[in-house]
Image: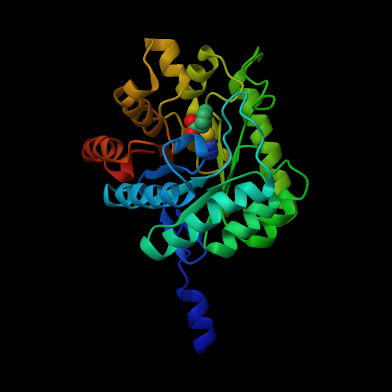
Length: 293
Ligand code: 7PM
């Protein structure tokens, strides 16, 4: 074999591992994605530099606690949140990504829907694109395909400003599965490799409590589309169930992450990395990797 061919063969192509631009996200075990918000509302107590340092320290702590990937987001998708300009979003996420790439070995993903932000984030070192709008913004499919990074395609009914008004489905799992199937097909048609596509039912994005619970119960029906990523951490469905404020949602969040893993999720997107990793490792001891499919 020529040295060139050997080099090509040597790049990690293990099934169940994602190549995030040279850093690997192993999906053989359930991976933990740590959430890093870099929105001003998450740093109401200081200026831009202070906010940046705090964000980086928090990301480092999440990696020490066992996070496999850090998801950096500069746009609040909270229902009713104000839109953020492209430049503002770039100014928020790029400096944090640049620092993080130097400070941690884990891959970094960028939580954005904007093609310009995708390009700036990947140029800064991001290895994965997480899009709550499933690459439906103009130019997003082409941008993601050109960047060659894994993508997360998420389902949302409506838009962040209106989605929780009156979510309606005949069969929520079927509709989410059909939507995600169409988005996977569009991504593949744009040139994104199927092995690089993760799917996400979008808990809380245009779903009532009953829809979220049904999706969690029947999560395995999404697995044929690709590795499933879920975000349930601290979401308002916990408030609907238990009436708990966001500061008290740790235990139910860990339970929901574990139930998602049990039902086939390959990545869980969480705020509380340490507690989630401990729960998953305990669960894996009972159900080792080969048997938890
Ligand atoms: C306020 C309300 C702030 C909701 C932030 C949120 C997901 C995501 C988010 C998810 C994927 C949150 C959400 N949620 N990306 N980004 N899946 N792939 O609770 O469920 O973090 S933002």
